[in-house]
Each structure stands twice: as C-alpha cells, then as structure tokens.
Length: 317
Image 1 (cartoon, one colour):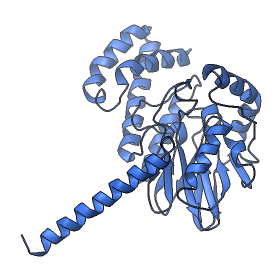
Image 2 (cartoon, rainbow, N blue to C red):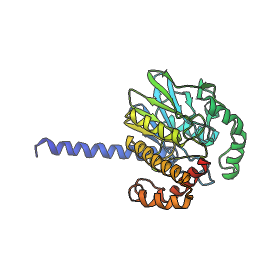
Image 3 (cartoon, rainbow, N blue to C red):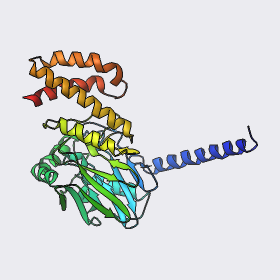
Image 4 (cartoon, rainbow, N blue to C red):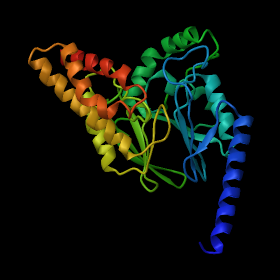
C-alpha cells in the first residue's frame, strides 16, 4: 500500500460522513418528500408507498421527478392531489429557487396528475398526450371524489388543472438548455402513455410503463404486445438511468427483465388459450418455469403472477 492510500481512505470516509449528514438533514427538514439526486440536474422524490391511496399515505403513492434547467424546472408528474403538489413544490425549493415552468403528465391515472393545480402560478405548459387528456376530462371529477373517499379526506381538496399542450406523436423539444424527446408507448400501460428521454444524459422517465421493484403494471387494455415492444425499444436506447412511476431508480437490466417476462407469459397464455387450456393450468406451468428465476427479481412476483395470467387470459377473448 502506498503512503497516499491512507489519505485517500480518510478523505473517502470524511466525504461519506458529510454525505450521510446532508441526507439526514434533508430528511429531517422535509421528512415526507425527500429529494434524491439522480445526476447533477436531475432529481427524484420517491414515494415510500405503492398501491391504492389510503388515509395512512394521504394519497401519495407515486414518484415525481424533475430536471433543473437554466430557465426553470421541468417536472415529470405531480402526484394525486393539490396538497401533494404543494409538498412537491416545497421539496423542489430545497434544491433550487427556479420555478416549475413545464409539467409533463405521463398518463391519465389520477396519482400522476391531480397535483397540477399546485403549479398554476408558474407553469407555462402542461404537456400530455391527447389520449391521456381525453381520459382525464372523462374521469377527473370522479377521481378527485374517489381519492377523497378512500383517504377519508386526508388528501385535501383539489382543483382540476388539465394539460394545455397535447401531443399526438413523438417529438423533440428543448427546455432551457436540456434536449428532450417524448416517446409514446402505444398505450402500453394506459391510453396515451408518454415517456421522456434525455438523450445526452441517457436518462429515461417512464411513468408506469417502466418498473423497478415490482412486477410490470399491466392493465385491462389489449396492450401487452405494445408494452413488450415499447420495453425492448427503450432497452435499445441503452439508458444509463431508468426512472419509474413507482419504486427506486433502476437500470436497463430491469427494462429487459420486464420485457422478457411479459413476452414469455403472453406467448404461453396465447398458445394455451388457443389450445383450450384454462388459466389455472397455465398459471401452474408458468410458476414452475419462471419462479426459480423471477421470484427473487420482484418484491411481488408470487402475488402478482396470478393476476397477470388471469388478465392476459381475459385479453384473449
């Protein structure tokens, strides 16, 4: 060991101590909505809760991400109420004094866009797909009422604030000095899912199209093949960082894992359905084949694989 090595070790220990202290202080200052640094100008606020809104989580069950530019903040999703949006705004101020100028709504599920109104004083654009906007208009009022009921009012009151810029196709934009590309999933998770790609930093913002800790979030639309295709397309971009709608930041390995799993399950369900097999037979076969590998790659494989198989069977009809 060289004479310089002990000095490097001491510096490393001091750096880690300072980092841990700063993280602890930030958590104490804003114990619920803690900002996590992804890169120099990209940040996440990761919800500790997943699943339905409840009185305990006060409706906060999805992630928020933001990019700080020289001309303002680009915010990806706003949570499931105006009060959550206000907490997001407060958390962002621990990082920058720049106002939120642009908002991206990844899709129309309530936990990702009902917080829009918290930014009405500064946001100049709220961007979403046209399909998502149609769904928001259709179900927005119902979602606000539902979320208030299931959280027993702890979510607070919310004014609806809809997207102002509607996309019908993929496009490139520049926000401040940041190059951005918008990618469609072809309804992979819900109508009009919108992903955001930072090509220079190779970071993908996926909303609920991308997963990390949990099984892929498929819904009752006939879209599983589109979701699989989208996942492989995202993997071909070779992202270095993958930011999801729920769970921690992850990597390209998670994207490939999800694509491979969904592809295998969909193909077998389709084949078994055409042969007249029932879903229980298919489920037992799939569990036997896939559990040894995938049980340890997801927090919820054992509970979710049955839902995936049953839903895919319904989609064959």
